[in-house]
Structures are given as structure tokens and as C-alpha cells.
Length: 594
Image (cartoon, rainbow, N blue to C red; front, side):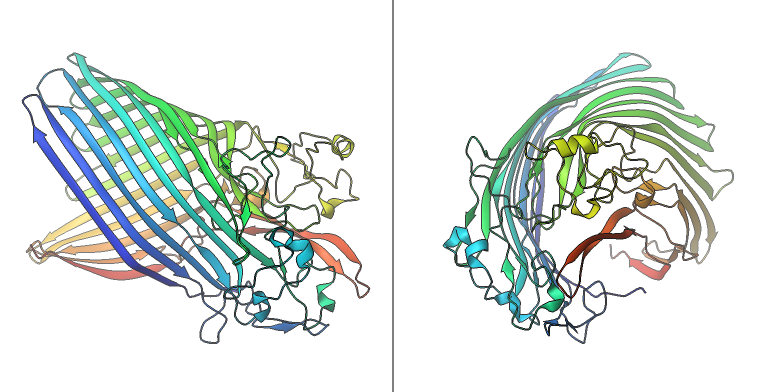
């Protein structure tokens, strides 16, 4: 059953400023470009009240366990961004006519970003405490758990600064009448530092208590913030060093109950480009181009983490090779065709991880680095104007992606029992490593099954990259009718997308189907040139589309008997799809005042 969930979105502060200044010298220009933004963004999910549907997975306002404990699952979700950044860039650009042209410049950027996010549930008063087993869960604050705050179950507060600077230069040289060569270099340096604070509580679920259905009304919650299997807290010693990117210990505030730790790291790279163009006539241009790109690293912080155990992400680089041809066939046909090959090192990919060892632990989504991967393919574009006022545009692309080196655990199949699974370690090797530096964490839900009982890393070689459909095509037809009352433009478009996978594991449970969509619009431009009216419909036939691959998850849990004896079970696999909007239509009016 589909449900409409209302959200409140506010932008109480948004300030922006930009400047562009140019000084003209005899043979070159000096340009200074600067700008900044300061904004505050808020997104709130609805509370559990009768006037709005709640954000729970099911429309349940409350239920009572056999022991008498009343559960009211509706929560309010509160996400905020406080972001301000400013950039400066100085360019020197040649202006003298001639076969040799050049540009040089320097760039600086500074940002301060905060992202507090929390959930509240005033209807479940237990979230404000008192908390059970303080001597077990709050040992780092003298066995006393801080009181709850505004009935928050989850509270995360990243506060990060970023600084970047770069210098670069590029030259174009027409060394012959029809040939041009391009070469450029850039040095980039990025630095990020800051803190993250978090608190997470647990109440009336099997991870906290063995048999929640037997719990009575006085059952207290527990505070998981100081539990080492939930919140990362390395000692910083030789035996337990800080992970890369963590610059100090995790500290605990006895007043707020939050755990905090500092971050800091920097990245740098030298990148560049080189290209060759051939233009034998005004209708033809062929080119070959090489570029090396770079993306800075970062930290896994914020809404999907609670002081992640794997916080640091290395920088990403790519070597890009491209061949292309742009060709006009008379005045009515224009074509573009390109072939490309991208070779990635340490590609940054989000990977979900779930601890299944049976203790109190936390799921997380981390940005991991895939050591080697490629993306290659072909792109073709055609613009055809067979008669006046009629234009036909067609595009097609083929994309082939492959992971060449990498490993990860599949959250749907952590024990690697699927017939297509490619585990790095056998079950016997995992069992033999117990008690040592175990490469196979426990998976209690497959214990007793053949090859089960352990999470096993899988070899990712041969899998496709996420959200990379092999084939895409688009067709658009425009026809303009000119009248004394204005011009009417009739436009129809068709798009088709191949199936794609939503994660690094090319499995059926991560695949979304191929889909297509038809859109149409009519545009009227008034004779005065100031008024435009657009009537449109998107997704004309109300088809289901998928703007990303599916993401599979495993149904696993513990069933409890009246005697309090738990049995670990796997109930199956479900999929999450990210779908495109349904049929949407409307009218848009535009007017130019000057």
C-alpha cells in the first residue's frame, strides 16, 4: 500500500554574493572571480500525531507487548544543514592573436559545514531515561548515564572545516593550419578537519533484551554510546592505534551523554590534460584527448554513522582516454560520436555494512575505495532538421563497467552462500582463524548451515559498477508552428534505460528492470517576445521508472519463545527501489519585464 508522507522543508537563511573583475593589459587579461554562500536548511519528518501520517514503516500508532509494555513507534526526523563557503580565483588569460594561447591561475576555497540530525519521540517517554545497567553501558562516565534530551533516540552532530587551493596552467598551440595541440597541468591540495558528536539509545528490541515481548511497563532503555562495538573508541596505543584520519581519542560528556572525536587529514595530487585536434574543414573536427582527474578523500560522518570504525576515505583518481568526431553533413545533419575509456584508482563507492555477530552493534554505510575499476563505452548524438521548423534529436550510449580489483562483504549474503558468490576464504579457513586476527566476523543467522556462521569477504572482480546501465537512448521531436498570434512549439520525447545494479554485487536482488518514459509539451511564445506559456505532461503513460539500481537487504532476526529461548532465523530478502515520479502535468507562465 502506497502512503503519502508529509515533510516540512524550510530555508530560513540563504545569502549569496558573487563578483567578477577584469583588468585588460596589452596582451593578456587578469580576472578575479569571488563568491560565497551562507545558508541554513531544515528538513523535518512528521511527529506521531493524528493530523499527519507518521514516518514509521507501517501506519501503527501504538501496540502493547504481552508483558504490558506499550510501544509507540512514531518518530519525528529532524535534519539540518548549516553551510557557508567562500572561494577566490585569479586567472591570467592571453588575448594576443596568434597560434599560441595560454591561461594560468590560482584558486582558494574555504568551507564550514555542520549537519545536526536527530530523531525524537515524545510519546515514548522512556527515551528520556532513566537508563538501565549504567555500570555496564556508562562505565566511561563513572557508571552514570546522562539523562535523555528531548526524547532523542539518535543524535549526531558533525562539524567540519575544509580548505582547498590549487595552481594551474594550460596552453593551446595551432602548430599547423588544421592541427592544434593542448597541454595543461594542475596541482591541488585539500585539507579537512573537525569533530563529530553522537549519542544512540536502545529500547525494547532483541539486541537490548533477550525476550522483549515479556517486558513490563517499567522496562528502561539502555545507552549504547559507550559500547565499543557500537561507537568506535580506539585507545591510541601501539596495540590499538587511532585509525587513519582520527587525530585524537573519543571523549564522553557526562552532562549530554554524547561521544565526540576529532578528524583531520589532507590530500594532494598533480593532474593534467593533453589533447590533439584535427579540423580539415569547417564541418569536421576529430580529436584525441587524455586527462588525469582527482577527487579528494574525506570522512564517513553524519546521518548514516555513529563514529564509524572505518572513517577515512582515500583520494580517487582516474585516467581518461577519449577519441571523438564531430561531423556536419550539409546544413541539416549534425553528428557527434565518441569512444572513451576511464581507468579508476581507489574509486569512492558507498558500501553498507551490518554487524551480525549477535552483540549490540550498529549498521553503517561507508565510502570505501575500490582499488581498480574501469568504465568504457560509446556515445552517439544526431541532430536532423529535414524541413523548416522540424527538428529531430537522437542519442544513444553504450556503457561497459567492470571492477578489476576489490573485495567487500555483501549485506544480503554476508556468509557468501549464493551460487554466484566468490568468497575469498573458505568456511574451514574462517573457522581456523577464530581467536586470532579473524578475517571472518561471525554471522549468527547462518550458523549451522553448510559454509555458514561467518561473514566472508568476496572478490569483486568482474562485477559491474553501481548505477551504470549498459544501454541508454533518447529521442526528441520538435515542431514549430508560426502564426500571427505567436509561435507554437510541439515537443515529444521518449527515453529508455537498460537494467542496472544498485550496489557492487551484480546479483538479481540488486537489479532494477529496464524502463521507458514518454513526455510531451506545448509552448506558446507571444508576438511581443515577453510572454511564454508552457503546458506539459511528464511520464505520459504513468509508467514505473527506476532512476537507480535496486538495493537488496536480508530479513534476519531472532524469534523468542515463552521461555525466552531465542532462535536465529533468516526470513528472506527484500528489495528497495528508487522510482521516478508518476504522471505529472501542469502549466507554466513566464513573463519578461525588460
